[in-house]
Image (cartoon, rainbow, N blue to C red):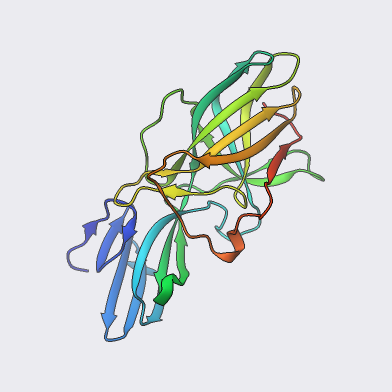
Length: 243
């Protein structure tokens, strides 16, 4: 396949680049461009595009593979956190992100032509079988300081506010990708969500609110229609346990 350069971060894709175990190739033939994604030298994805302006790799919501059947992400903390009554604590966690290739035409119109993951994909049930939700499962350390960015992950700042008249133990956080926003720093593997507020209502329930972006200099991804945020403020209810 000739010389292949390691991609150093999110941004414009040209020629051939290596991303973890994948190779992405963009081959131009006049006004036609062929896009390929290889795994172990075998073509996994092949697309032909007419007159694209550019291709860009961005972080994307981790609920698309193998198919989209849920909006939820369940973050399991590696260490549970005890929070006193009427107190709050701010932590950083990491969530998985997929990698998406956007093909842009004129006037910033785009089409997602490929979505893949460098992480092992696992789903879990949050709640009871007849009324719970299936969620993309991820395990994260609860960090007091901003963690180092990693390819395939996004950093979320979570403000836990205990409104309950007693101590609570927090071991999991449920997020909704339909409400969550993603941001990234071009030419790096740094990705963020916005601030997440976890308002604890009882020992077993909490309400998740979604706030401002964490990093003002981070660039928001362009959301396709299926992921456009709701026009009214939305929230996520955790009704089946916090531990």
